[in-house]
Image (tube, rainbow, N blue to C red; front, side, top):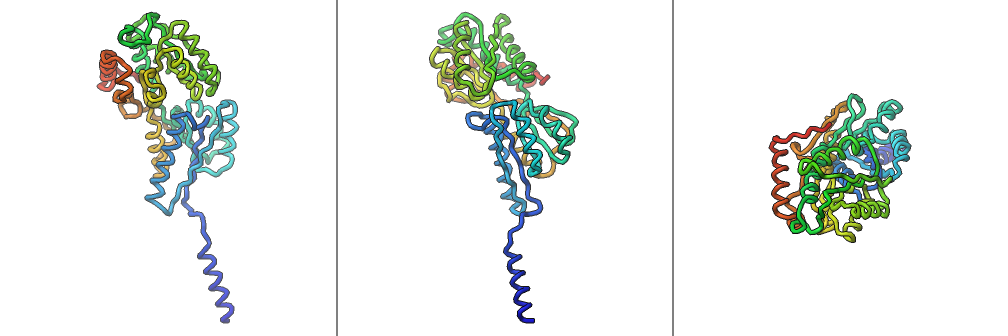
Length: 344
């Protein structure tokens, strides 16, 4: 009997030492349709989700959160297959991603894997009970970027040394996609022509999100054709536009994060998308069990997710004071509600 009691006690002790996965542990996949390195939007996505996970784990140590960052690479043709593999694994309570193209990829997966939930930022999809989306008002963002470009391309050489008389600006995009064609490009032009209806736009495509050499060639050609301000929305390929600007002496307007330090003296504006803030809030909302799946939200300047940087010293040293004043007046019109730019 004593021997049996000893064995039972030993087994109980062994069981007590065995670590089990908590029943309410949460696993989140951050699906990056690209790479985080060199891409501020995707780095902010990962940072925001990880910040929410750390905060939740600190507050509820019995319910740890595991975050896996999965990079799909820059070949867009591979994104669907890679997202399918992540969903098929069944390992993740939610997949959080960011890109306007993601709803088209995720919607079929909600039928194939009906238990899988998705939170998609910088995207729009309504009425799918497995998907919650938040899009940024990129009409506001592109309009402000265009307005600044318009002020600079129409400035005198004395005000802005690299400005010329051509009234031509450029936009170099990695690829054509619905948000670019339907919102960003038209809104950029809308901002330009709010300054001067005679401004023309040279719009060109790299063909991918990484070819900096081709982007530099496009930028040089655009500058030779009269563009004195160029907006790159091209991921890692934008480094080529920066290099060309430093060689050829033209200005750059920057999109999505604060880019002034990337090329001091050449970057004239930065319109920021606070994706880190939104990613953290969306992940925290999910961890609290409050995600409104099936709905879509749009956020912009009023909600604090789109911003035009005015307090960077490099902005003040690069852009003429009269131009900064005119830009501030237009920004004030939007923030006050006098000028309303609803997303299409």
